[in-house]
Amino acid sequence: MRHGVWTILPLLVTSLLAEGYSEADRRKAINELEEGHRLISVLLETCTVSQSSFKPDSKTWSILEILEHLALTEDLLFSTIQQTLENGKPTQERPQKEQQALDQLVLKTVADRSQKATAPERATPKGQYRNLDEARLAFGERRSKTIDWVRATQLPLRKYRAQSPVGELDVHQWLLLLAGHTKRHAQQIEELMRHPEYPTNR
Image (cartoon, rainbow, N blue to C red; front, side):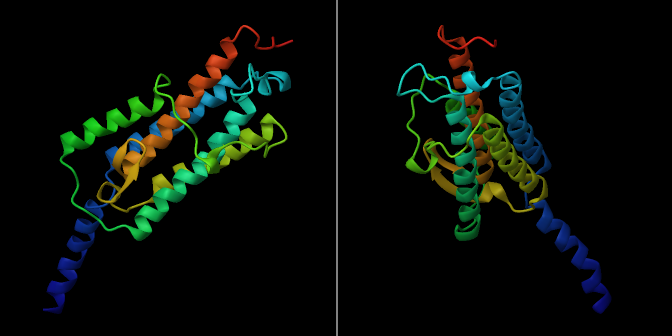
């Protein structure tokens, strides 16, 4: 009888892990998060001090302010993810086709700059960083922390949901929202760089 218990135990552990975070979802989340960070990094490779502080009007964020917003949002959304996992109750996963359709909708909708959005107060830049290097480092450290967590977690992220600005999402989709948000602001930086009054790199 005792031998039978030890035979069954590895099967139970394997079963529990199988109900966790799928490797396909993990790779997708990491790829999207890394891609967003890469886009920002490439855009800012040659950004000067005057370019980082350029504002065409009082209502438009500068590149430095955008980076501060990204760092603040990383903290805010990662905190939401943690709270959802700690305080929420696991539910039945959506059917796979429904999951995939919503995944794509999240990535497309959040990154769409034609849909205007207002940042919450907690994610509004307030001049926290003295220069672009500080802001880039702050965002990069937070994004690395998020990606490291995604690599390590075994929690069933598809089974935990919370309301978002684009509807009820599971935690994997919250990660996609975070990635899409980064790409949204990469586009905003590109818009600033195309502005006729944007300082030349001289």
